[in-house]
Image 1: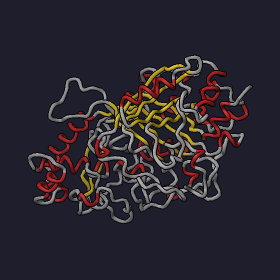
Image 2: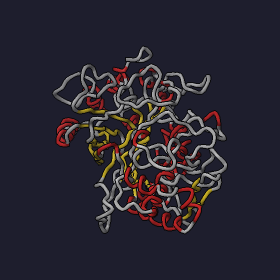
Image 3: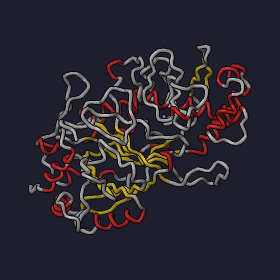
Image 4: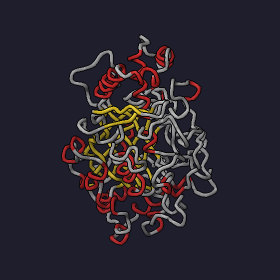
Length: 476
């Protein structure tokens, strides 16, 4: 328990994740009746177990609950509930405008453009609440959903999205994920890996608390009970072209086999046997090893989770969960690698003051069937990630990271003009990525297609439990 904050006032999926609950379902809801919806919110914090599911707080007590239930409210949702205009005007611009209006800044163009999003995301003004159910067993999702939607006069279900975690925290592209999250001052989380980065002040993610920008605190919408201890979430449905990713690794490996620098410097003599053994790849050939070297460089980690900054030549099972590393000096992790672009740690960047200012809490779960490279399907079913990117300021954290770092490369002139190789808005006609060599030179890969496209999303405010009670008590 933190001496700085009452965890029982926070929604439980903000500072600590539900790591033991692999099944997740998102209920996308519209307010059907203002008064009934307020009653529904009030009931969700009543302490009763026989009606609306109770909001899970950050204080789990002696044991974690079997299922967890949390909510986020869009600007349209707050307005539909009758939140006073004076309060609504105090929310930040990007939240008021909503995710679809911010598409260009987020790189949501072409196949990611909002006009291509399926229901219910094609009608953003109808998305008022996003309720999330986390469960240990799949059948528990139906039970919680039934209770949540029992009062049909309060909210209307306009859509759902459902996902399930893979073993060992794997994601569709084959990487081990969910290794790094910010650790917060005064908060102990036994499930979180040690992290060599500075502890983040609570204001990184919670309104009303100190940030790591000296003298700056984000504005708290008033009244205090509405805004204090709240935060913002960028909920994203991210379709992943796993087959295209694997095909690109084939293409890149074939090109590198023709380059003597690659075979000598990227792939040291005899290293293919060790790489393939550790990553459980049959047939230890140079081509198979080069595929994995390219995959490791694009991400910044080997697919087993080993940080490239600590072991650039081969993956190391002893370093899979290693957290104490940095990009200071001549790191072997490429400047353009995904994890380095999204979190430059203590490495030198142009916007030096921003090094730790854009850290986010990331909660994500895969959706769709796992990809089997040995048995491809035609056509491949849709698969991807249901992602939540949580921070105290959408513009300064999520949007700035997405625009400046992932899609423009403004943190370092050596990658400016390129997009993130894994998640960026790439076009094969113009995309490029530099593989660093031991000699100090680079090999430039070209023709990266877009591997991740947005298929929906919304900006949501995650209110404190006190704020939920406040909204439930509105009478105007």
